Image 1: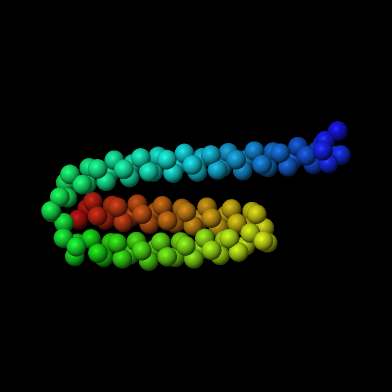
Image 2: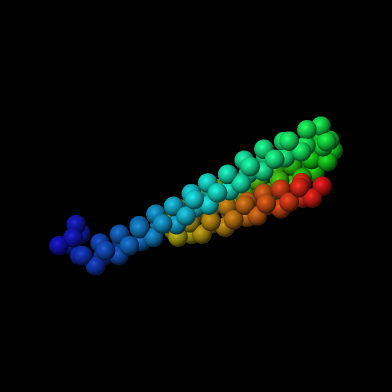
Length: 115
């Protein structure tokens, strides 16, 4: 007999928790891979850029990235507020916000590399 006196409910809850941990683990691994790629890219760019890029070339991309980061923060705040209503709503909002942020960072990185 389970903790709640209902094995099926307990198993269902454990299954949902395990699925959530798997999603979090995957997100951590993706973040680790992204950070490693960013570090490698930054090291490579540092060697290439030394004295070759002016502030005027970088400012538009950084300004746009800051705007997108601000939007992502707003979306994350809204997702946090939604947590009181539903855990699933929170997870969906956070996932979408981080995906938007990842795409924005990748686009900004691509534009800087193409310059």
